[in-house]
Length: 191
Image (cartoon, rainbow, N blue to C red; front, side, top):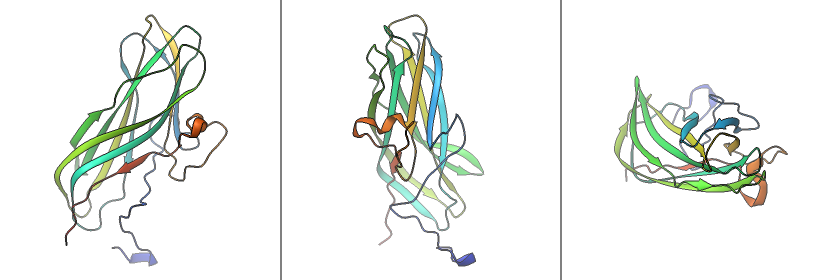
């Protein structure tokens, strides 16, 4: 607990992670319009950092990341496949990967309609100590391709609004899918 400057910082179940790094964050979402071929390629790579740890902590157990995403082909007759890679990292002077997992591949329809989806991605976190000053980083990579062949323009988005605020251009909010990126991170309890 840091009580300097009349504030208390402690990791809770509601700790907010937010990023303005990487692609075009718009209303706390990453939204892209990119050219796709029939080969999967990384289209987005965004880091989400917690504030530096104030106390030593150990991570261990099952982590779950929930990503609200949406995609659509820009013209009929094309079909997009996409998946996410989630990486849990430790930043302590240098960056080191702890665990990395790929989500299931998801496919849109062939019409120019938003196709929202909720990805739930489990990660098994080995026992990993963090010392005071270390930073926990979650990296989200979005990979995509045109599954019908040839080239196509694909439009993609995923929400990372900690408050789950709806805005008119938040495509992931349709059909009841949240616009919040949630990471449930397991900490070892010292009891």
